[in-house]
Structure formats: structure tokens, C-alpha cells
Image 1 (cartoon, rainbow, N blue to C red):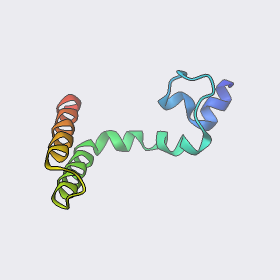
Image 2 (cartoon, one colour):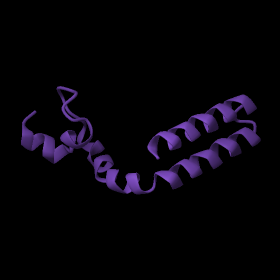
Image 3 (cartoon, rainbow, N blue to C red):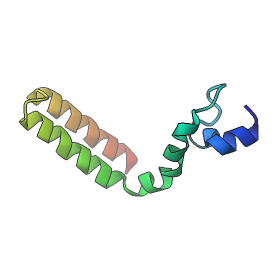
Length: 81
């Protein structure tokens, strides 16, 4: 993959050349959202916590699974801060 191919597909932005083939062109929009994702991480984690709790309350996840997810999300938030 040439450097112009990487720029066109966004391969250099997220994967940093870790893979020989780069990423699929369909993944380029993901790279474009990284600056927004970086600003909204708190809201993203809050939404994921709410979803994990709701899945636990609905019985889709066990209580322990929901707690594990919530602990993991809390840890991710702590690492980002």
C-alpha cells in the first residue's frame, strides 16, 4: 500500500502501519470521528454504563455480568482521565 493509498483510506490515522494491507476503505469514516470521540468519551462511557445496567435489569445479562461491564467501563474512564 502506498502512502497515498493510506491517506485515501485513512489507514495511517488509526492503525499506524501495523498491518500490511491497511484497513478497508469502509473503515475510513471511523478515523474521521476520532477527534469527536476524544471529546465525548465521558458521555460515551455514561451511555455504555446505562446500557449495561439496563441489560442487567432486563435479564439479558446476569447481575454479575452487568457489574463486570460497569467496573470495566469505570476503569476505562479512570485510565482516560
